[in-house]
Length: 447
Ligand code: NDP
Ligand code: 2IT
Image (cartoon, rainbow, N blue to C red; front, side, top):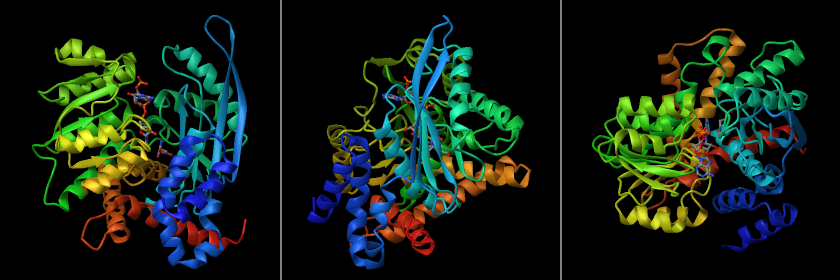
């Protein structure tokens, strides 16, 4: 690590003790940005990176609710409003027992640069709770969401901060959250995205992150004269992002052979085709079952206790579950087994050591803040449709999404191409995302 990065990180670590995921996200960005900032001293003088790494504000609150046994439950709620230099705070809500300040600050920090990359006017934020929606009844989820929104509603708004889904927050949760906001404020506005199509949602928002992740991979593959056609693809996760990454990869001619959840992964060498994927959607989105049931139904291998499929040989890997799911050893194994393209649907799924393996091997590596930006980009399109009080067709939204992903890819090349022709997409995404936010902050004065 260079002295520049070391000095910067000493300050971040001292100010944010114990927040290891936040340190990791900032360090990854600092490694590519600090040399760029040295070469552009107006950013250094204005201490832009130091200011981006300090949230505008952190809101933390108690969420009390009553479970089906009549017992009072207490969770903790958060909203990190990280940076609004280029638009209202925007970013998802995560409901998962692992949620803490460090995880949400890393996600909010990533979101600032990601949202800038989309070209749409959105600042960065993230929120959530340590509430675990697994094995809860719909009534319990509703009770929790109503209590959570009762406090959150004081801090958000269509022109202030627009939350959406993330892990554990899908259509059901967004519905309950929206209902409570509307009841408290007596206004029907685009305060959340990921809404149902019947009441203000955008076509293609459910598909957008996974489709965008595959569009980004497709662009990377084109730079080497390659495509998805005939390739073996492994996917981790089986939630929103994984389902639609698998769907689009299959539509483009790839053969998707794995999916996972936190209990294990399935390996189906015959390929997870359209009908099997429809079953997965039903199993995960309505039955709220486990991926093990896929293996029982389709008689394929299930690896109990292994939540990541990286040992399965593949051409393309689409990590789509959670942070730090690809370790250095996983990365070495992936490359050794012939994987030459990784497109991150999850946020920060690769550790810094894993990223270094991919970069050293010069494989195609699309970091989350570029490759998974299609989700929030389509949230931005949902906001535009809400403001105009109209809705675009599926084709129109898909075309815009596709163009945004191509554009992000192009910007990564512009800022990430190295003298030998290799594209460092990590560096490209960090610099391209940073410039717009940095210029806006300079224009708007010291704050
Ligand atoms: P979902 O809740 O729909 O699905 C999450 C999936 O990942 C589930 O299969 C879940 O398994 C698995 N998973 C979650 N946590 C862990 C863990 N700690 N270990 C192993 N498996 C885990 O979430 P999404 O699909 O929306 O999100 C997946 C990733 O994509 C996240 O990193 C999210 O931040 C990122 N992302 C999401 C966007 C969106 O629009 N939804 C946009 C951009 C990025 P189980 O059910 O067993 O917990
Ligand atoms: O990480 C992400 O970009 C998301 N969870 C989506 C955020 C959004 O506002 O749509």
